[in-house]
Image (cartoon, rainbow, N blue to C red):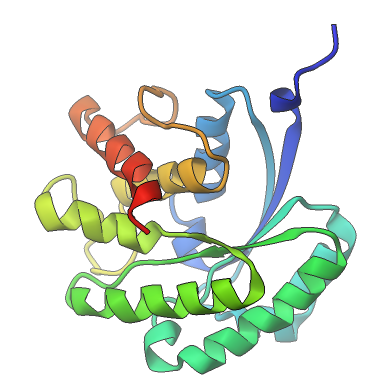
Length: 217
């Protein structure tokens, strides 16, 4: 029997820093996707605190894109750069987007979240990602907007770690659910895999917010 299209492997390269590496976001996404009969093969190029320009100058990421045969390349900018210098961020994304398109892959922008002590920054972050995403025809995964929606009406579980910046396990889980819903177009509601360490009622709410975010962008 021929394999269904849905069972094919999707290959992804993640380029970013600890916002992607913490709690193994690529692995979480792969686990959720497997529950929907999608195979996600992933690689991660991560440097702590790095901007996309840091990755570009190092050269490793561009070489990987050119030779890796990926379906998607996920770009995660340094978390405060969209606020401090959105035009610089846009320049960084354009550099990578040209290489990604040349390799036949699709550019995915991982919209991050505002730090806990400055939630008002989310509007600027969201605008920076959305603007360059529209310019380049890239897929924008609205993680920061999903965090904002959740935090508006929930005190628990905590999404920010103690440093008020990095994600807790719940924060990374919500992020993975948003990727599943937006990028892979699969409903996370009801998936049990990947939720170890989280309360079932919290998992249900995180899944719901991620799925509903599709219609709120």
